[in-house]
Length: 271
Image 1 (cartoon, rainbow, N blue to C red):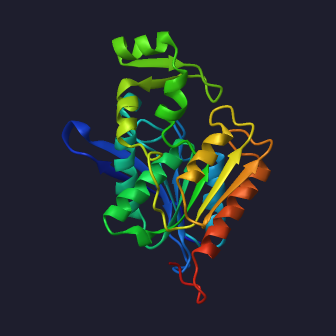
Image 2: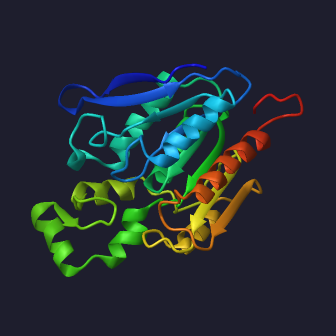
């Protein structure tokens, strides 16, 4: 079995340069699509879902790739410099540098927004065939505009205007979440729920109905922007935002196998 390799890549030049930490395992079966993990806001690549996917890929001979955005986990850079554009740039560099052949993009929460933008950018570059499928877990595309801005308090708006940031507590760790004015402004430039998302690859969406962070109706809205008949949404009645219980992990791994099958031709080659 191919060993898990630790890699790094520098993204950006001069003052914008940051070192991105990568974990990858090359696949043993070249006909099998690899997976690329795209984590959520303030998550890192060593979470239970990412680990389970990598172990699953190793067991079936598939490649797996994961990394930390700048300001996250083992990567360099300041978290408060982060924007969707910045993290998208890093995701594309990692994808181009460390993956080969068709890949399934697995986006968790904010990572689903990054995944959708990656498909747009790769399609623009003429590389749409590299995308074997998308698995979107508790997807939060356009979350700054769609989910956060309507709920901002006057105090938070004032903090953004005067200080360029605000903080709020999170149940997922001891440190508060930090949201910057740059993140909100850049989010508008990366909006994806403003038209039809012309994605040819099969898409699977897993969404918990007890998710306190991303309402399940947000997943329904995303589906409305994905007109392809190759889109399937699974609502998990008692699922939360993390979707990391054993049953949730099983659903995630099952969806990956479905995507592999959906993207295969009769002779087993991916398309």
